[in-house]
Amino acid sequence: MAIGVFDSGIGGLSVHRELVGRLPDANFVYLADQAMTPYGGRPGEEIVKLTRAGCERLFAQGCDLVILACNTAAAVALRRLQQTWLPDYRKRIGRPVNVLGIIVPTIEAATGLPWEQEAAHRGEKIERLDVLGIFCTAATAASRVYEIEIDKRRQDVAVFCEACPSLASAIEADAPRADLARAIDSHVASLTRRIGRPPDRAILGCTHYEITADLFRAALPPGTPLIHQPDATAAAVQLYLSRHPEYDPGQDGERRFLTTGQGGRQNGLAERFWGGPLTFEAL
Picture (cartoon, rainbow, N blue to C red):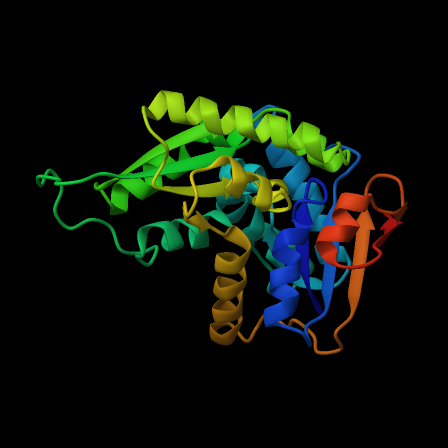
């Protein structure tokens, strides 16, 4: 069996790389829905439909567990799939399967609290606000998932989301580094203006953005902590598997890369980030 990693494109490689580092013997199947990328500007129902189709493809490839390495899919589709689709799907295929996302472990990392723990005392006087900036797609920003879930747990953390509508597409297209730097500088400046000062911490709330984390660090004030979704997600998945032996990750160290788009070598940015050549099979 295997672990599936799903994203609209190459961004999920940032999560995949950390998963491989923590689970080197596990089998992995990565699926990029490059025929339909990006997801960030699509209507919610379409995102749900595309995410469900991607999960079905990975389950058909022998995956027991699928990780949505896409903030847009996790923010818009995950809860719907878990509540209304997965129970019947498990019965139909006759085996335990599950879908997890990257937002829960990210919020745990941002708040320092487990997902189950919410604030015990609301309305208490707050001496100092911790301002958290989140750079994300338009769909993730519209879902307000980070604002809602972090506020349930920490009233001393103020969340500001900055939608970056075309950034994931530019990264996917291997745009020139100077163009990416200008776009990131512009989004950091926009968020800073809305807050009135730079954020105390930041989350790169789209896995594509992690590939350009160095450009975000350069645009933000020196030393601004970045909460890395790939690290948090990989740690959470490793813990989850230790508690749920019914999901078999395999142990042959196999790696497959699939795409709904055109197969073959991926762009130079993806390969530089991954650390070697990447060839995707057309699905």
